[in-house]
Length: 409
Image 1 (cartoon, rainbow, N blue to C red):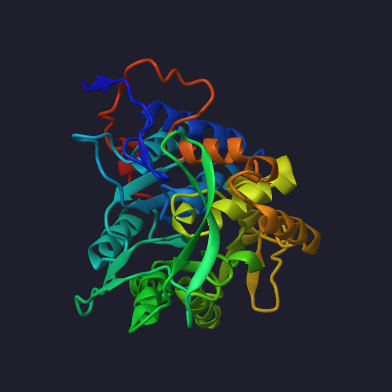
Image 2 (tube, one colour):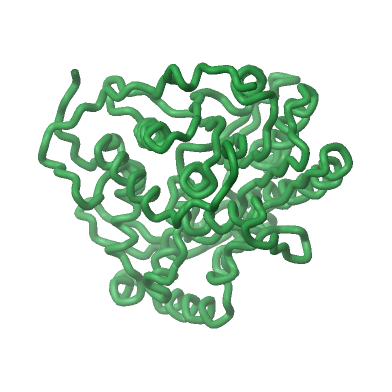
């Protein structure tokens, strides 16, 4: 037993510890926010979610389990409890596994490097041994700082940089007393092979490798569908995001989708798409200069009409499973961000952006919501949790139960 009181201690938007009870309650809230399940006959479809423990990948996992009744595998890379608590994703995964079992969803979670072939082998073996050797859906939601190429052993590192010239933008920070400040930061442009390195990590290479690996093992079901989660964002952040190094990676991801779509259509009658999601507070997005300020201002404009990640992923699953028509843009992308990019909304956010200073920011952005969302990433600021009480931090990774070890016919 390792019970203790856990207080939120952070360096900027990065918290040093996570709260197990808060993470569990947050997952419960997400599950309860999913609409009633779509009626299906027999067992649910088999799905693989790569990047299942955080952000949109977590939302995809929970929405798939609660809405569609998926069974299958979630893959993530989280740190176990030790001297410090486990990562928030460790506790969220344990909570998701508990709910999956409670609702009779046969879901196994694997912790390790999704970029490596060892994980691909483990997933392929599990699909063959437990799920009848077929995979219906693959959701790809991976954000990482580096990737090791399994063929060459080369290590690639992704960077968040503009292309061509330095980029100066406003950004939102909180001082040591928790007071908001709007500052200007300048980011140097990409140099050398920064773009190629970022594309190698965050582009479509690993997604395509997963599909090829599973196809070579004859594990793709007829009509197999895969979606990679992406983001375009506002013109206010385009220079650092869509037009920057990460944007080059997203363009590569979308080109990979078109290649895979043609290939899967010919081989299994399947398809591949990218899903363009809308703004949200995630562990990845808070690291991008200007995104925190933009998201807080967007919330100030839209309030509760913002669609949270679970709501967006419910829509994606409905489209992928045929509960609703698949709605693609001219480039073959599912667009879940249309409400964010409405011209009137963007004009209102831009007007607030232009006048945002440390003195005015509390009037222009919903900072209480933003601060709570950042805390909730680590299990804090969750209603119903007693943060003054000791909590058990040594939560084990979810182990497959006897039900999970059955070989499917």
